[in-house]
Image 1 (cartoon, rainbow, N blue to C red):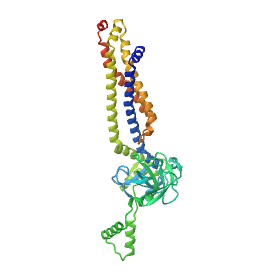
Image 2 (cartoon, helix red, strand yellow; image 1 turned 135 degrees about the horizontal axis):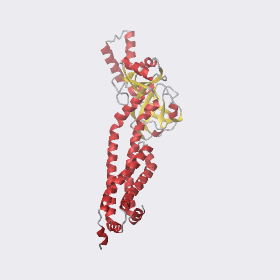
Image 3 (cartoon, rainbow, N blue to C red; image 1 turned 180 degrees about the horizontal axis):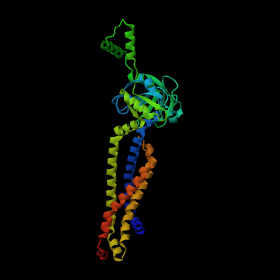
Image 4 (cartoon, rainbow, N blue to C red; image 1 turned 90 degrees about the horizontal axis):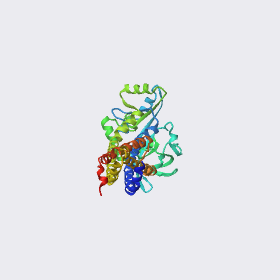
Length: 393
């Protein structure tokens, strides 16, 4: 390493600039690894927050995160009465745009019949909804404050609680409100649309306007409320039994929480995963080519010095070590530079960047192997150097 160190000092500017450039490339690679890890994490945040064991959805759909699934809330009590079910909750999901101060931001509105178990752990300030109407719990990323009002749909909602990092799979903030408020926003129609819908329903069902019972049936059908999923919490050891019971009915689709996360991971972030992986591969190949080119150039510049070393009987391993150690030093400096940059800037990215130790360790060994491979061309050049060049002018 002593020979390599002396040669680095002799060409320090070129070496430092190359190592810094390599560090910038590796910074992008680390950022891509962190972005993918962030995508995977965000995909499961909302599912984890709702803390359910089973998700009951419309038949032949994959659930609210993959399909436009709808199910009547009248089935909630039916599903809740199954042996082994501890409690049930009804959920609606919709993504919309709302005015936050002078800006408009996209957010996901989640309507809940009741507070999910363990939800308080997600609240960093304030409390869960206590009123049946016009209160919300919003994620802090929206920039809202406790007591502030936000207009969603046709109504103003008061922020009574703030969560930290509860987002959907697209990284958009999640707002929680009472189920009836969410249903009103999702299905709200103007008066003329309501009259037209009722007229069409009366015509298709051949309703007798003079019959009170017919009119009551019409109102019950029209006002039948829809949710996107009914989630169940089961007693310990009863999950599989409840799952199999619901599957036998053939009325619903039912998934475990793990299956919902898997669907999200495959359907939502599979393509970004492949794209990020391709970019990482291209950048690592480019980094290897840069190191190889620089090491070869440095080796070529000291051809006469290497010939002199051979002439005086320097062992081959020392000449090989000279080239190899330079390449490894370049890689280590580049890696350290990249780590310092990403560690101090990852929180500035618009999407979550999750730096995982296993990703950093694996990248370290990849960089090490990359530098060894990159040094091979320089080593070949050094070993093929003719000692007669040492005697030249």
